Length: 314
Image: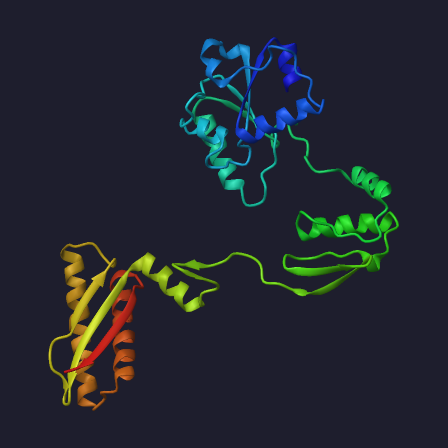
């Protein structure tokens, strides 16, 4: 891109810390030959016409704080996308990033830019080595053991088959998953168990996996809120009208008040029925209240709030 820009009489502005760092390393090692005066600082872009400059920037994966994403959503402090700009995304979306990349492309298009990407133009070359290049590395290194890394399982398997074809002993090829332990000792490699890896649950000061029930309750609370039914019992059954407390369940208003009144009435009827049947065990009372209220709320609002019956003796 720098060579093409020089041939077209354009200056080049590099934006994004990782890209600036990589270009500096390439120039210091002699891999990038940039003519004097070609590179221009972002602060000087205002002095140049659009046709006089090429911008190389980070953000091909739709990263939220990357330069290209900020430009697309008009949040960059120096560069703004104008009608007629050409944006070339020379990258293939990493699995899982497709939505972010699509949002960035749409935002660029909305701003008036023409966007070229791998689906409509030959603008992408993989950053990973081809099969022939991997064979060259294997031929040069001639490994006694081989552990393919970086990629999905199908990629690791293909790399392992390539190594076997280059003469590596199949018994000394190890395709591993995250957490697999490989022990290296005196020139030998062998599997030796697993360790726990992956996403770590952080809850306040506690670390570790939380039980599914806790996470399920939290998701339910975030979606539909909670209804707390407070029932007071004495020796002969219910004494007072049950109290209903709603948190995050429904906005205030006539419809919400009407539904809460129905819930209160239903809870009173359940308690009366249990009292006539002589059922006073707290767990049973809570179970009957929960089931009856859950059914009523679902039929009336198509919501499933977390229902917490509280039974106290007075």
